Image (cartoon, rainbow over all chains, first blue to last red; front, side, top):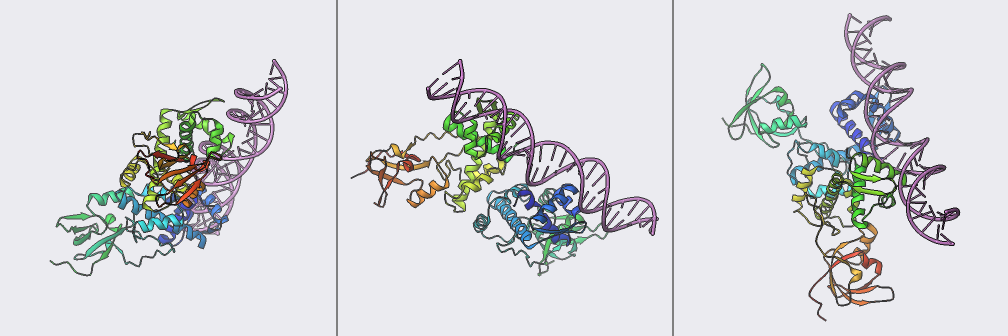
Length: 225
Length: 225
DNA sequence: AAAATATTTTAGGCAGGGCTAAAAACAAGC
DNA sequence: GCTTGTTTTTAGCCCTGCCTAAAATATTTT
């Protein structure tokens, strides 16, 4: 039977599979801020339910039914995040905690109605793609970390790698939000920082770390000098 | 610390206090579909937290802090019900279960934003008053059960006593919804049933039980014959 | 390959909240 | 006042999911 904790584990496993390919207990300890023994415990529970395949000391893989639950939970999470930002006017750094709770509420029917009410959004407030009701969620976009952009590029922010509160607030303070178009004006080999130009003409220098977490699309049209 | 179960108990105690004046363990067993021993257990927990005063074998009363939590939970429950009906187009008999989950999500801030988004509704889809952020919720309306109406009265449905799914679906089948205005055309002493006239001119006879659960307002203007 | 280090599992507890069965307290009827 | 029936409490158990400590297995280093 599905519980909040089990859904959280399945969602974490799905995300780690995407990010890293294979899922170690250690990676779950980190992602879920828990203890190794708790992970082993829960993996047994999930394996007994047929949601994961688990071989001792070897790692874990989602089964089809486990992936279905994980995708559904992720879908709910991201739709509720859109709700909180679009309808209740929260900022993108405030919504994660509540979405963690909301993702465990509602069935497919409710989720689909929420989806329709929100206008079938394709991306959540952090630029992450929202799985469809059929469980599709590869977004087909070709995003690169802003750290890979070179001088002269015009780039548009389409997502973030780390959607933690601290990082998002950092972007807020820099007046960087989803959809913003920036131009790379300088690049320092020394610390791999870059200077960017905002649409209003202002400039600022961003650190390598900040740039690595920004997922951008290179715009075809070059900037005019 | 607040948990889902504790909030459920506090809300149940509040409702029983309103309905019956005093709260017995038995009444909680019925309201929460649980067992006597579970109630005793939880009342100890709630008393230790300072949310209720409990004297063995004597009954239980909410403290101020307990009442605050109960009212806040009830407020969230009813606001989410409005959301589900107004925004996601659920019918009034479908929303209770999800609202039971949603009422445990979010803080005051989220609740107040939801309230504003919904346009500060005063009543939920069953006609029950929604407590304000300050915990006021006496609605001042003077509602009577429809069973008290007499022939010739024009009555408007403003709420229901029992908002269980079965009863609400019964009303749906009769094309009775909140705000509907009916006229009493016949009254049978025999079984205390009454015949009512719909705005479209159709008629139907309602049982005593059905009428007792409908909370109505008598409209001042008499019906024209 | 052996030693040192890191990861995972087992063993055994704990807290929350549910349950049953039996005992205790209260309420009613005779 | 006793007896009967109902309500409440106690006692003891179960399940979920967390934890620590220690043992077992992998991996890395030398």
